Length: 188
Image (tube, rainbow, N blue to C red; front, side):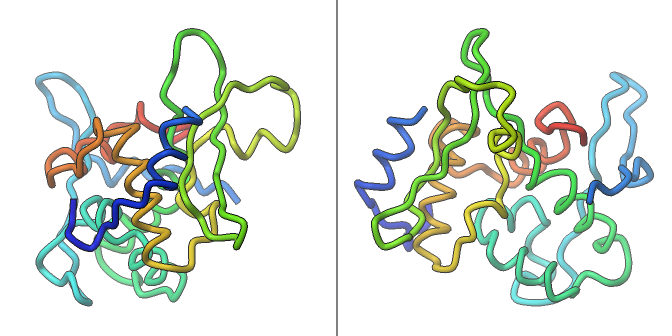
């Protein structure tokens, strides 16, 4: 992990103890004839502090606040990166499947401190499958916790890496592979 990530005990414990739909644009995919699996052909960022250095999956796994800010301010207007940013926002970071644990249905639980600061997330058993308030918690959503501070993003990413990348920051290839695989998402 990056050096700026703090070993916040409260966040780490929170991770461990809890255990307008846009149409999907398939033109952004490249299909491999050998195994017929779709793989996204990710572009390097054409602007900003990651210009020519990182792809969108790498940015999501290192600085999601930057991506969300740029998307909300409509920085992704032209070229291939515009389509990739729309797919990333509408079909990836807002609808990540919750890892299965046996046959039980689980929901995400976002955890906050007494001062309303985000400290982590985890998954818990869904006791009321038909509750409307649990529908939006049936998937992991990067936009749901309303994170405002860099330390809160560090806490979010720590939990994300723990559940989806075996407790380590993913490499470029691992991040791109995860966000390219439609089976990791609900209704991609």
